[in-house]
Length: 150
Image (cartoon, rainbow, N blue to C red):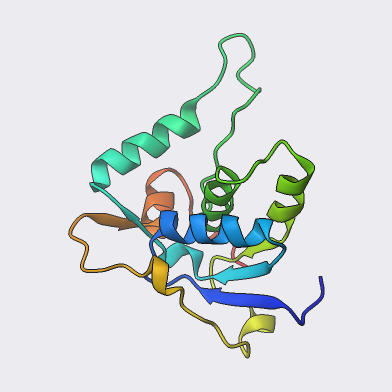
């Protein structure tokens, strides 16, 4: 990964869907992104409804072979990547190459601590009443923070 044209984004208090659509469009254009603090992203909506929806996504399986997909992640960084993947033409070569240009981290890794992070104005939250953070959602669907920390 060449380091000269990578954009570093701090995900704290950014809306997940807005950020994902911004990233999907720019990834298809050939840009590279690194998103840190994925657990601090916000999903708008009622908490209980969101938790129920994500639990249903995780529970999907076939009756004939439950080990077949679809699989849905429970780690905050992987939830972000999966959300962006849903906005890309995943089954085409251009979509897969665009998806590879995205990196996400739960916290700020030590090797990225000196980088300058930007906020995306389009994705900033504006006085939301009903929301849940991706980290809190991940904990409610089965993620424990001790499992993997970047």
